[in-house]
Image (cartoon, rainbow, N blue to C red; front, side):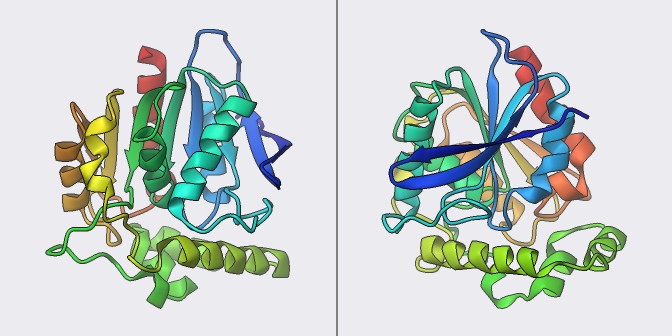
Length: 263
């Protein structure tokens, strides 16, 4: 697997940490992966495998992981505009923008504002809309053990991950991630009430990927996004919960790699 190199970027009064790897072919797309509420680390394995053949980038969002928590970060919209500035600062073009959970929500908020640098969009178990008749899983009421055992379909894998001790640094980072997630998505819970009215503005090819047993945003959320985004396609990964990069990394890699290769 290709290693991801660690970089820093100072922009808009905040320093963020991002990692990139893989070949930088001039006309090939760059995969920018936006992580979920749990942070970037659980996507490293997936991206290292993709970096064998594709140029990939993943950043710790402002307020997450090793990145700064700027005073101006108040809403999901602030995050979207920040990433548009990042794309410009890094001079990224032909971006294949992928986001998982909270990252999928950010990806949509970016795409309804501008797709000038984006050629394709992938949404994995994305937050961002609300279906009153389909309750979301209440992430904020779950402790670490409940989250792992609920969000990961394969119970033996969940128990294996829970058995790995965490360091004080990792615990502090997890607390930081949760604090920023609460700021962005406490009320209204994990959705932008206006987003559904804007999704028609996404005109790039969009692929929606969902776990068949997602307990956080059940499958009807993915099916609704397919209806709201013009021309969107959907793939369902069987025996998969809310974290396909953990539950089914091989299937997720195959789906994303096929899109990158075709592009």
